[in-house]
Amino acid sequence: MSCYQSTRNQTINITETEAILQGISKEGGLFVPKELPKMDFELNALLDFNYQTLAYRVIRLFFDNLKEEDLKGCIAHAYDEKFDTPMIAPVKTTQTAHFLELFHGPTLAFKDMALSILPYLMTTSKRYEQEDKEIIILTATSGDTGKAALEGFADVPGTKIIVFFPEEGVSDVQKRQMTTQKGENTLVVGIKGNFDDAQTGVKQIFADQAFEAELAAQGFVFSSANSINIGRLVPQVVYYFYAYGRLAQEGSLQVGEPMNVVVPTGNFGNILAAYYAKCMGLPIGKFICASNKNNVLTDFFEKGIYDRRRDFFVTNSPSMDILISSNLERFLYYMCEGDTTLVTEFMEDLRTKGYYKVTEKMQEKMQLFEAGFADDETTLAMIKKVYEEENYLMDTHTAVAYAVYDSYKTRTKDLTPTVIASTASPYKFTGSVMCALDKKYETQNDFVLLKEMEKLLNNQMPEGIRGIETLPIRHQCVCEVTRMKETIADFLK
Ligand SMILES: *Cc1c(COP(=O)(O)O)cnc(C)c1O
Image: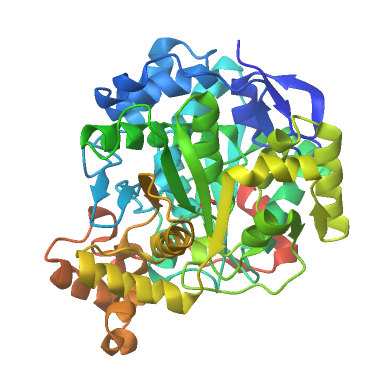
């Protein structure tokens, strides 16, 4: 039976369905599987599994309390025609890289990979746990999680979803995608602050026991759709196995050989999922953690010190504009071999002093990870270069990863087959992407540029954003960081 414990308290032991429902542990820790499962199929099988079959084979190892038909049902509902290709996560190979395209879902960012299944896992967990309160999904977003979660939870019976995003910190397309969201159970709120403010605010609300009791009396219980929820993380493990199968299939690697991964990183969820895949037995060589100018993780991997006392930058890869990377807590837990006391100290230091330093032993273990960052100019230059030389158009986040990979390759001469997690469609960041190609687009707004991009690529923009500029705006609420709680209470009245 699957068993989950908190990164800050090993005596808290619960099932996966409880962990998915709760989202975050009471004392602020994150749930992790007590033991990471091992893959129970041959690497060769990856050549044959389709995405859904593979998803079942991987997810069941983490969530084995779920009955076979229930989990298969969740998967079938999640990975269906919502995705614009039956491959779900295709790999595109160019002259210089393999791009694992994770943006073929309804909201054009990799968050769909997990958030299309989370609502089904959540309602299934609710049934197993006989939880009859209405679930309130509370989400902080740097732009992409919000829309993907809204899309997943809109009009799902027994749930409501509330999304907080930085009013000034997302792209025009991202903002419009969220503020036009339909669904009677949805609320979208812009906050006067950055993503870290939103995320910290949400975590504080999760920890507020008086508020929790008040809402429980009204028949509500909170949960999270952020990657602090283990139900978000586990479905992301699947596509690293899938990518390996595709590379083997096209002859880019021999089964058994290692594969490197490069991940544009913010909250450390995506790259942690790759680490889980390796622990399960997938031959991953290096993990290359790519950041933008908010390069707190680059410093962390170089020096073993996580220091959030620095300026926050709004960049052209806004989904990675983060200084407090939540899932790093899970990573620390593995690096110190499950020492929950130590993890608690690190998190306490981060909160009170603004930094922590890992032990030497941990730092040694962290050598598996490489890290680098790219500023806005480099990111734009990479978009232009790869488009002109390889006829492949990257979004800004993928371009950050590409830039970091490029300099890693030059530095190390490492020729291991490498997959770049391509986390968003260029259509989602049209302004930055088009201007990278030609400065003449600078005077035009994102919505005009959507049409220009269509012309340039000679294809149709994805279904998910077609006509978005004329959809009615349904959410106009903006609030101060200090008033998040009141905003929630008002909505639930
Ligand atoms: C969320 C996001 C990221 C960062 O992923 P994490 O799991 O938070 O590290 C990168 N790129 C895009 C486009 C995203 O939406």
